[in-house]
Length: 458
Image 1: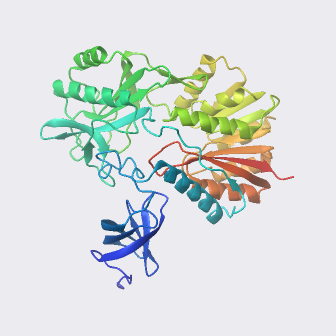
Image 2: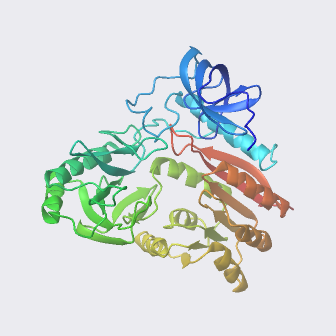
């Protein structure tokens, strides 16, 4: 086997200047043109690093000491920031984070989508970028006989014990720590991945920002939960804000958090919350945006880009529990939503009923199969809205959009790279990307949400 020829080797110690950041927020330094990715480095900083791993075209390193520091650097306020993998950018001022995300979107659109001339607006950030998450899902482990609850250390399955998290709602932190203590009191054993033994895998807490209510979900390996009645009674007594206690059973050897079976142990099956003036019923396994304040900002932008007069038929592909659909329905003649998850469509129908919205219709299935069937039935969309998962839109769906020729497409994306790829396909199919608005849904992480306006070329 030929020996790998690189300008650095594992365990080398080198002096570098950071030139850029990766999309994950790591510093990029180059040695004779060979990139090394180093967490916690910021552009312009000079540092001594140790090379940890070497691959053919790039390597990984860690900082040993700084020679100069960036004016954009700040001391991370979180005491476990360097151990926990939840945030990537707490060492960067918030203003600099927003500039980084803007640059990232602009560069990705140009490099992957060949869209150098598209307007990319400054990122819409938060006035207070802390404590914004309304959902906390925390793995449970054991250490020295006691239970620990926290987040996994980056690139590992070691749980970093945590009392509170600076990006989670205080209410969730308090409830999770309380539930952990109650489980410990009744001798509940934590799930062990290696031996596939123990009972409690995760504690999930969901918080309604407007309603102030909390849902607790105990995710267990077994259906049996020892001392179930006493645990439920203690949670109920200790936390009056908890309106719902749910058990989800996941007996599989898997990293997936939720199992298929869910049952209500006490209280309501749903947690209720609002985005703007629209009310949502959220079940234990519902997908619901974790930052409702910024979700409102994002959906307002999607509604603005849809530019509805009240006469339009709109299709919402990947509609989930109907969040965007119900926003669009306020200004559209009719909205059709499609989603592959049957439970999500049940929730979408429930949410339409909850809000008295009658000009929506939801279907279960793949968007790329359902939308052509609608087309054959004579349902022609004036506007199509897509909000796909990180992998972007299915190619068949993009072909369907091109064939249907709506006036406008509004693309909501959680991954600028797949957005850029899909925009290039739509541009080649007779559409033009007009402008792009990034929204900071996840401050202190490297993620950025984007809303794009695409119009059919004349």
